[in-house]
Length: 326
Ligand code: DAH
Image (cartoon, rainbow, N blue to C red; front, side, top):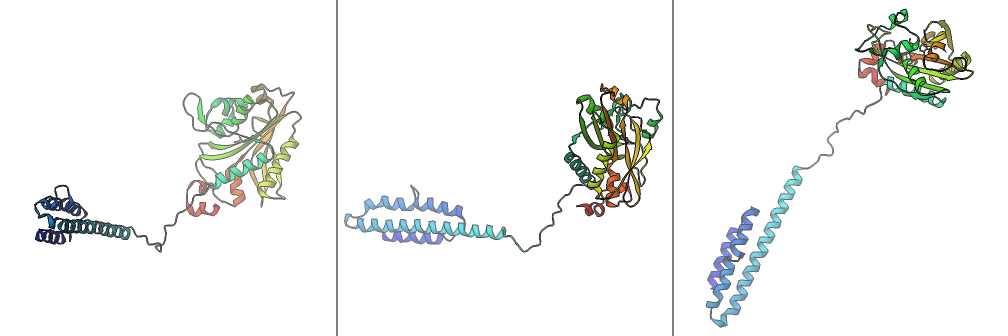
């Protein structure tokens, strides 16, 4: 019996040299399982003379504990090694230089439009929007530009089916606003427009405008001048003058071209007193109400303010240009 115990112990010592957790679990079963080597030893106890049973029993128990303890230690050793290996393979080198992430920024035209909106909002205007795919009626007819009118030639554009077109100006939003709201009206609308213009330094088939419309009782040209002068003061700074030159736009009477003095006179857009025909078109009585309107180019505003010589820069997506306005 003593020899058997010794043999099993030696067998165990030889087999425990393994490095695999799986094999260890096999070993555990082989020695300590219900039909394992140790269990068999316990079974054989009954064949041992009574006086020796106690001492053999203790030896087998000691063997059992020895095996249990060694297997447990070995398993935790293997697990520890595995953990270290994993840690080593996942090691981070915090001294490696990072990847530089470029943060985005608003395009200079977007920035300009937001600034324009902010100024007019602070002057008590609301901001309206309208569709870029517009009906011919809103883009032309309702603005006192009938089909035969030569003013249409200047805005020859992208026509779609069923009397739809890409709007050539933000002025149709005037009509949409007056159809929806009763005076007093004080709104601006900023947005994209389209014309079949070949690109050059001052033209691009896509561009943006800010449209303004005020309709109320006792509105006169003075308020138009005052409003645009205040806008210019806030947008371009103190002491920049606004000039009104008589001009023709079918939806205003009188109409004026507007320029600012910012290192020379620079034309910004048109303006005028809303034409009675336009008020009649939307059911507002021109005897009771008057209005003024203006439409300025956003690209113009940005080109003048930031001294940008060519409108095409806005649409090239050249980071050397765009980065200057981050
Ligand atoms: N819509 C005109 C254009 O694109 C500009 C304009 C002129 C707008 C006079 C107005 C205005 O509101 O009163 O050429």
